[in-house]
Image (cartoon, rainbow, N blue to C red):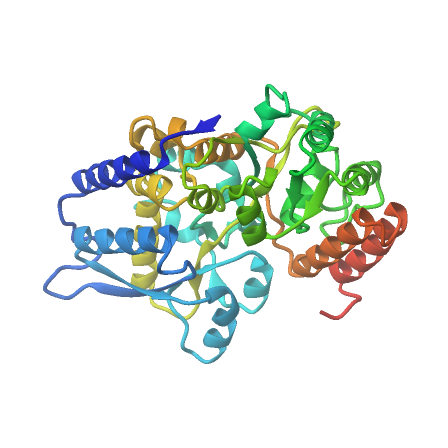
Length: 435
């Protein structure tokens, strides 16, 4: 897939998407309250930067919701809700609705959030069509024991972007479909284009776990009820060894987002590891100077690719009124409907979360923006799983990042790194190691 004509397409999308959604929601509503009694007010803490496409899109959609739902007023505050919510809850100063990251169990354990289930089922809840249209991995992201504690406000997945011109210059006619083909391609790039870095990778769990899963790995030991890790396995050895060889052969570097974007835009990097949320930033950095291809992570030894869905999610904060919870549910149901998701998916840099939005998006958008198109394909895949939400998994991921980096760079052997990782991960997951 190829990106072309970015500036012209962006202008088209801005006009078309706005027209679509405003036309679809042109009339007011008096849901849950009459104008005479005044609207039900719900505070929403959201974490997107106000100056970027996601923040601007969120503001536009909240404003549109308020104009078309006169009985409800959503009051938006931009803040790092994931970090501040528990403190605000303890102080009695928490919002009704907040966008938080993963690790829902910390909020559940503190009794700081409520299940969405009573407000999204039954009369006035989501219809079967609306529910069925949400990508399964999006719907289950934040679900614990059948209860929906967090509903995705945005979703992102890992993917690879590549410089099509450099591929052609090196004589590579198509992007890799397997990890073995990726290894062969970076070897060719290294040999034929010595001034170019073949591959830049992020040493973080969201970019380590997908290849591990594609090689047959599992996030937890089977039957452990998420109390044991599963890293001393052939899948982990295969994954760590693969990247160790690339690094040892000077075919791969570790880097972070801003460094990757700068080198990629300068033509110094052939393949950039990133996320669907970072795709827009990559486009901005390249600014149309060359064509960008985008592909899912390659298939592993299982024969299929794999991925990890992550992102912020809406939570209902405890100790508010039933009317406020119903109003919050109305907003979230609206958020997942076709036109708001079409607007979000074509303006924010994130893919839509509902299949209903795909036909409502501006004509040709997904073809012109392969980063979003590939993300949609990844979300549709049965091999894309939700990021773990266990209380201690944040610490497990930190240990994974360190073990991967040490093994790949040769600071430790693969097996010693994996054994140490599993010991530490099990201590966290079992609760025997204090957090």
